[in-house]
Image (cartoon, rainbow, N blue to C red; front, side):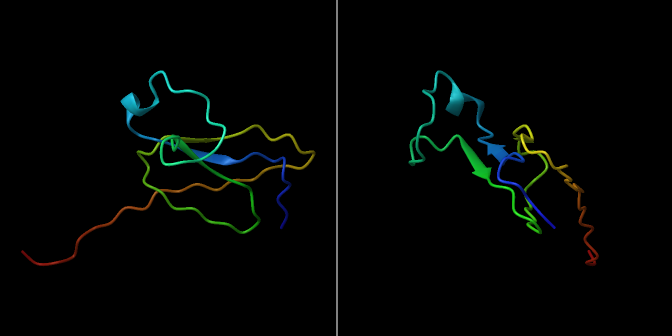
Length: 81
């Protein structure tokens, strides 16, 4: 497997709409500028996050294909009641 540095980062956005209103550009991560989290591509990495969390990927600027696999998991309680 391979993952080029320029194949695009995954980003997860702060789900609170008011938190990003009139926000300055993020130049460094601090507790006050934590509006998105970014993950660099890494072969074999699996990230799990809730499906309601807004997310996306940066453009693939490498010469290699980027393959991402996504899926949803549902839980069903089997307890009595």
